[in-house]
Length: 423
Image (cartoon, rainbow, N blue to C red):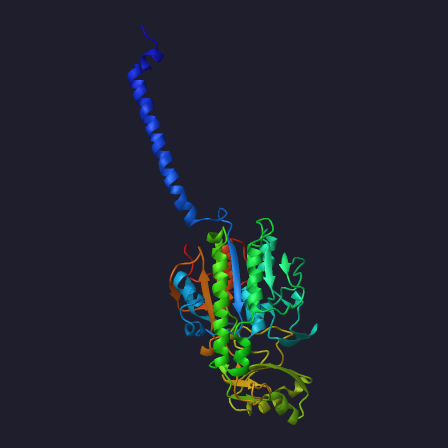
């Protein structure tokens, strides 16, 4: 009688056939894998999903400016990534509060950077201070560092040192004057570093079109020339990114802090209060101002004096509209002034020296001329998509999602729909 094993043993011819079929299947599998490898490498030449995020902010780049230089970098960003028709900055639509919002996902009523100048009951005057301690919310680069992601930050508000005992791996100790071309070059230098030294989060401030916009106005020939220069710098940056071996893992976000309105006139609230002999410190910037009275008993009289100025909105610091997101006790002041769009507060002048002309900002972010830009480009973004708008307060949450890090928990924004390639 044959054993069970003998019963299972096949004739040699059948065994050889089974072996040949197995070899043929294995060879076919290896051939398919071999053919697919080049395509996979082309589609994803990166480092196994180690996403790098670069955020560039172009100061004063209004939402409609990119359409004035067709065919260049802005056109590429729009065609190959996502564009928002406008970015809504916080109030006031100015450099310091907007950059703090972009970095923290918080409005000024939470991060505490009310303008380029303001007073604090305990700390005194803030005047473009490099001290990160003025920020009351955790910035993106600190959250990244705490979670094991190196960061590099160029001239961003609040980045010049440690916040809560942590600092960016690469940063300037104080504001460093550099051209936008040099700033873009520094970004590329960081991206070319060996992986062990390379920051996966890079945030860089560029001067953009703000200066010619202030001096000559948003529709000037001088601004058009600067816009063309910025477009050329972005084109070189895109080419540099594409030349990197892990270009397929790099996401780029290009934003701005605010837009620009044509200046039509000026109002001087400081002079008006002085004529009424009301002692005060009034810190004005563009279209808004914070009034700090020496005597609280002068509040009602000061309000009446200021309401006499044409079109000026006079708000009580202790009863601001909630949608302004601007009440920060100890810093806001007794009164907050908002001028009509096109009116500057103080004696700022244009390049001609006249109080009219040039450009001005610092109004509500919802005002048409205050809208900024937003472009998202890279593997994380939908291709060729356009969304109506994005808020500056949302950029932080978007960045956290792209880097796969936990947000601070204090953010007031969200990941905007219709922007990312995957939910």
